[in-house]
Length: 195
Image 1 (tube, rainbow, N blue to C red):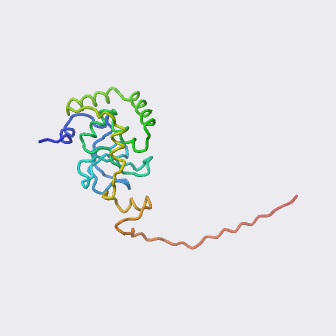
Image 2 (tube, helix red, strand yellow):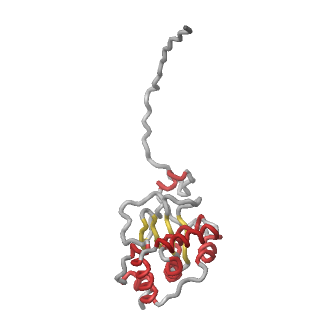
């Protein structure tokens, strides 16, 4: 039986209109987990699956406004699509991590004004082709997924720990050769004329 994800991938929709541009991880950012399976991209934001968390959908944002760069958005891909149906694109769903309810409602009002006709058609086609309904309370849903999430199984690269300063649980230290230079001394001679 074909999964919702497989049906979605086969749809002839420009997924970039949903903020889920197709692509592979060619130049990973420091926060992209090493085993991430891409769903799509919105600029540098990666939407993905992480095998150790099953069907859960994650956002990986190197420019996150939150105190974390990788966070869950939905328990399943089906729920993720239902969130997009409710919000118009993946962008508002990803932003929930750092927002309160009022900020989210303001963001949604702004999004509704800026959604293009092409984006609206893509969302309608997505809903029709996958026979799904929008999730009723996207903000509450995402916040409940993120509330007590245990991210300890996320597999980061050594670069992640270097950039964030978080201790690497693997205990590895990067093999960097530091170059030491002779100290440079500046001598400044100033003449002070009182006249």
